[in-house]
Image (cartoon, rainbow, N blue to C red; front, top):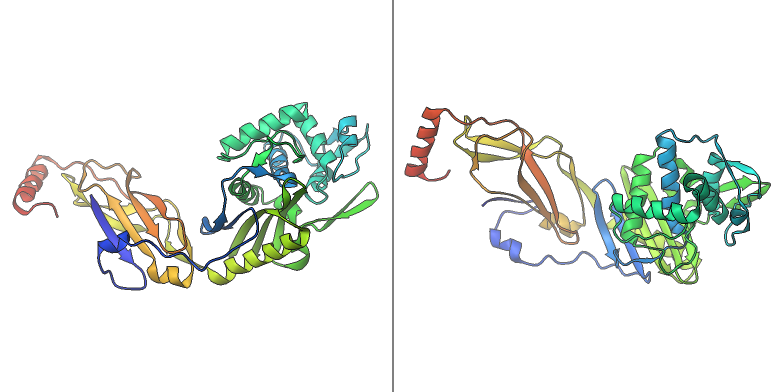
Length: 380
């Protein structure tokens, strides 16, 4: 096993330093039952409380309803100008409403705004019945798609987030889903920053408190039921940093707004982003055994950005770990090693390192020379 260690901000003292437990970053406490804060550029969790606990979602699960609709728009099966029929079930649904009329047909674009801006339960049922035949079948399809997306703590029984003990998501799943909406559907994501929408002569306003108080905020969705409490999935962009937060189980709308602002300020003020490596950059030269070259560059398949506190910046440690020397032949792009990143206040990260070039097996003379060198000098 070969290990290389970089320690940014101070000299290397010894490999034994890795055995010392990392000190936590500046403490942040929240009354939320569950919460998560993510830096999307760094793909890194900055704060989490009960992130994987399945919880009632209220209207925050409408993100999944919209996601299913966006996928149909993306693959061309439907268009924004298509219309969906309104059933009596949709028209009668209680809670927050878009106020669709039974027997009418509503444009998909209007239904999206009805779901995203007005949080219409009726609009969700219209979409569910149009896409899957029934709300129950649509919920089954949503749950199956959530599993495919890696949302392991998600189980959905309806299209709107209507209270049901089996209708649950974790805040981590909601954050993952929000990131997918932002990254996969840039043409539709701007709907989430709209503050109002008028349909059927009725003007309604987004309940997202950040849209009305923070100019950097651009989405996404609130939720409230007596069982779930007050929740929020939100995102904001300041400079080149996008932060995403999810809060669940708060006691009031006011507390929801205050906690969202406080958590965003914590993320922007306490953490700064650092680009450690770029895609294709050689992080290390690994020794090769019996090859036509003695080393192979280990490269990354993606940029590596980390978000760190000032303490984390001083104590950041980066390791390359691989079994060496690596026997030839080595295929270009083959996984050979891992890059391990640790720092106080962040979850450890492990990223694959691959061969940056091909190394062929040495000819007979080269193999004999290398073997003799190994016997005389040992591994280099």
